[in-house]
Picture 1 (cartoon, rainbow, N blue to C red):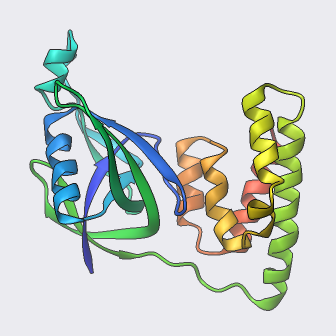
Picture 2 (picture 1 turned 180 degrees about the vertical axis):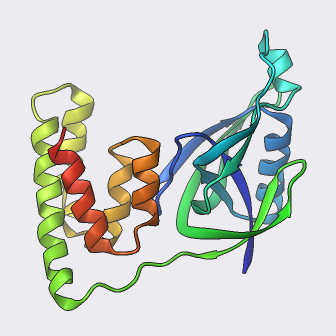
Length: 216
């Protein structure tokens, strides 16, 4: 078991191999990030099951910087990683990147206030059989071609994504890594992404992703 801090954010699902940019202004989460930076403890960015406590509206940034916002119950399976501080503003806000390394399953709640800490362990894939491993490469290629087709002819940002997918590092990436990294480029509804995060077969994750893209 490993202790990790949990930052619940509705509709935010993070996958291994990706970087999640974070702007932190609430007092409790600024304290949490400082703890992670000082201790090396990982932080999980977690989609939420429900709202436990609604925040009162803030009229201005000063009020927001001195009050905690809504409280949420996180999902049990989360992406977590290490914090990289980019900037601290004069009023104490933090800008950082969270480098998502692994998936974790949350178990016992170790601390609730002022921020969540859970006992957690790595949530790994089940191995696909040889036939599915071969199919996974085919699915990966189909996803790349589908995304490239969607991106070509659109704005520069989309063209850059298409160029990235067709670059040697992405072409040579393993299907397992690709099945996570792709969600740094494309977004779906939070509940769909959570379902994908909890899928323990590379083959099923790729198959489901291709189905979603074919519906676009």
